[in-house]
Amino acid sequence: MAGAELLTTLHRAIGERRKLRFAYVAAGGEDSERTVRPLGVTLRGQTWTLLAWCELRDDFRSFRPDRMRALTTLRETFVEEPGKDLATFLERALDARGH
Image 1: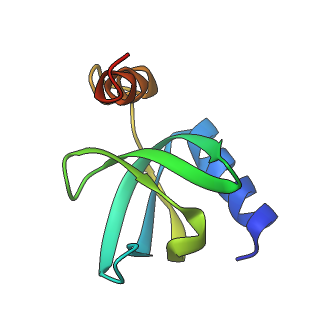
Image 2: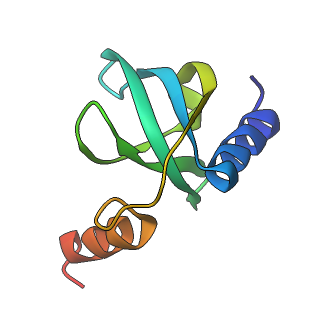
Image 3: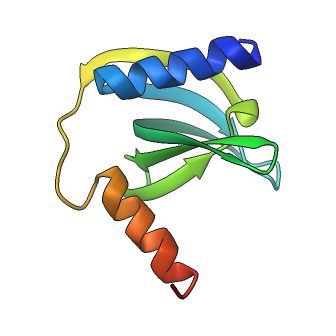
């Protein structure tokens, strides 16, 4: 999936609150399979990042779309839960930076 098409797919899943499943290659080269609740997309420098609740880790994670493989938008939807939402993700990120 090309860059613009991938971002469109991510934005659509966020808007429809549909879970995503994909294979992911971490910076160190480790492979994993992830199912996530997509919460937002951000641009860090020149790199897009998906902000999500990861069901494997039962915690927030960020994923680079260029490291995703075999991305599938699932039929399964999710409802926003306290503590698993974008606002909480951002609060934790700011706390981690000492703000």
